[in-house]
Image (cartoon, rainbow, N blue to C red; front, side):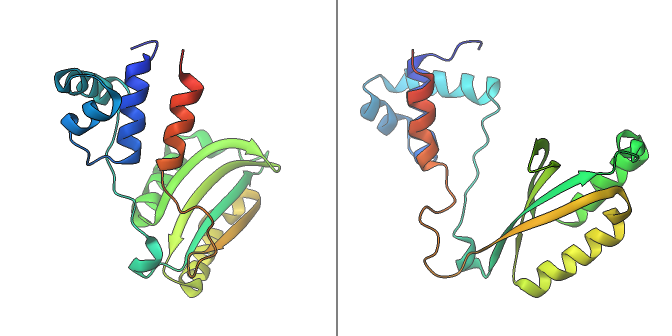
Length: 173
């Protein structure tokens, strides 16, 4: 699937808004047949690696904070690409399933970003203490942006419903 067709964008947008929607209902909404939706969905699931995941309201699960972590490895830290180092990273990630995203990138003078969720500030502090013990010698700098998940501070909750229309409109022929 090299170029995404308009119908696929409509199906994908519908699924991002409600992944539980039936093919029949989605077909009705976008104006095509149910077999078309079923066939196109199956192809996209395979070729676009579509993964269906529920995104709960984390504060209702007792999670108080969401944290964006930024890290810049030291320029002298050339072993970050070694298999041993990567195994240590993989072990750290498997020990911390509350890390929900991690990637390389650039900006703010940093080269890595991670997103984690914590029950409370004390848990976050313990997490950062462990991080600094294990990775501090390799990091030139690290910083965090902490978001409270309590109350009504979020003007737009963490969901992909809003992104669905952006993707559909941006990629339309």
